[in-house]
Image 1 (tube, helix red, strand yellow):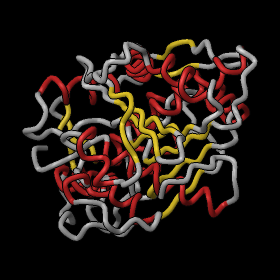
Image 2 (cartoon, one colour):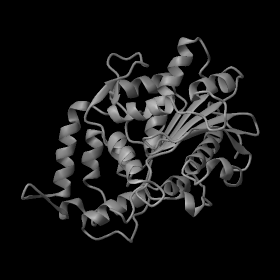
Image 3 (cartoon, helix red, strand yellow):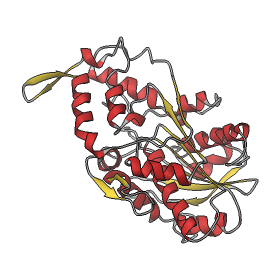
Image 4 (cartoon, helix red, strand yellow):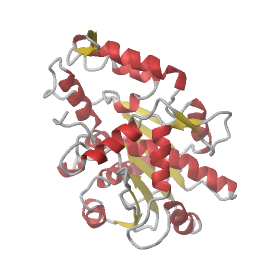
Amino acid sequence: MGTITPNANNGDQLTNAQVAVQLCAIASATNPVNEIGTLLPGWKIVWNGKQTIDCNYAYVAQNTDGNYALAIRGSVPPDSTFSDWDVFANWVLEDLDVLTMSQWSFASTPKPLISTGASIAFANLLFMTDTLGSNQFVTDFLLANVVNKGKQLIITGHSLGGNIASVFASYFVEILKKKGLSTNGISLYTFAAPAAGNADFATDLDAKLPAAWHYENSNDIVPKFPVFAGIALASLLYIPQPASSQIYLSFNDQKMTLREAFLVLAGVLLKQGYQQPANNYTIFTNGLDSDYEDNTVQDFLLQGGSQHQIINYANYLGIKNLPASLAKKPLVEAV
């Protein structure tokens, strides 16, 4: 599990994906620095980001081959581990801040845009400080230790972490290109990532980073957002139950089905033009969770939370021993 060969054959690519999904899970550990050696032998954290006020976190790990990975944590779950502010910042200020968009300066397409939430999270990553004492921001650390030494780098993240990983990869590859440096050693692996930007952003990322792989569980709502067609498709999930067409919401003294609410939201986001990248976009199907089959909003959300767990992505890639402590649901009974 220690090999990183981003531009190698499919067999090596699977190994890298298996490593990446475990690195994403470790980002949610209680103490990644202390736990990574046990959870993923041969790896150690060499740059450890200080959690930001918006509850973003990332780390850089190195394996025994001398190669590196940048793993970015996704949205935190609403449980006792994190404060109400942490959850609000991740889910509302970043995940759900998709109605407005920001110009993306690190692309060559005509009008690349990313969501305002993605822009906030990306800035948090850029200016995150290292708790291990390097006094370097993550870009400087990677340039000095990875690029300038000819090492290889996986950039990875699950959920919001995958969103940020795509944005950072776009930025980092563009920086290397402008410096006249090789990008051959860079690869990207995202799991259950919502789309970060519009078609021009996604097209540019596909063009400049062919060594990118994206994974989506077809029953996972999160990676379908905030794409118009994806949200419309999400309204058809979990039939026969919990079926959104059989779940009713009250709004301004009126009732509408959850499916109708999804379609309204899809219409609101249509003009933004969000799009997922196309390179190596893999969709698989995970079975539904029998614990959540009632036609209620709660069970629909809990089914979504169950489907979004990183353990589903690990299982698809053949990782069957992911510790239960790392397989947290992003939506829990608190909803």
